[in-house]
Image (cartoon, rainbow, N blue to C red):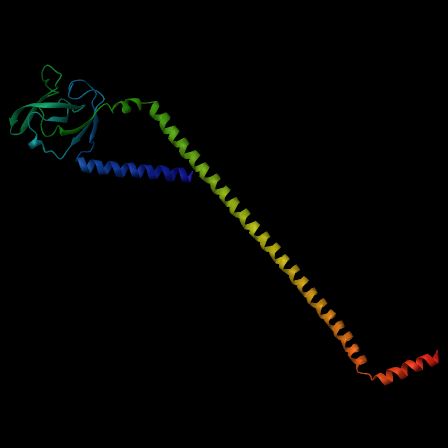
Length: 237
């Protein structure tokens, strides 16, 4: 659960940072709107996404610009229409109209003052607004559940992978210890064999030296005494 919460926090922080950056860049609290009617067709079609700029001051808006504003009647809807006239200069008041409408509607298209003005349309992304329609309930809840499920599976996989790697490392360590123990045993056996060979060689050399010494002593007795000793042995017989 800690890993899942961490991932959700990271995603939320990234989304917040991106959103704050976009609002600062375009100068509007909400730079993106989806066209929900055909009043501006063919310039704007339903489900087009429009991007507005709040950096365009209301005083700089001129006839022919497409602007986004709150409906003057009760500010209950956001409307995107084209400016068709400047009704008053002090304070500046505009009248708008949908390109596909026959006339301007009072309370909807005018009077537009700085209080109603939100921003000027600077970009249009065709038909991408279909995504927002698809993501309406219950589809959006299903997608959220799938995303959370993927996060859970990912955390379980990471945990199992860590256990497997730890097991492999432990097995390798035990194998290394066993190999080291076997190597030490082999070295002891080799050392014992070498010691035995050295001892056997020393004893064999000692025996050989003794035999050589006796031979040397026999060779040092004069032949005269050897003959006398031989005759004495024959007389005894």
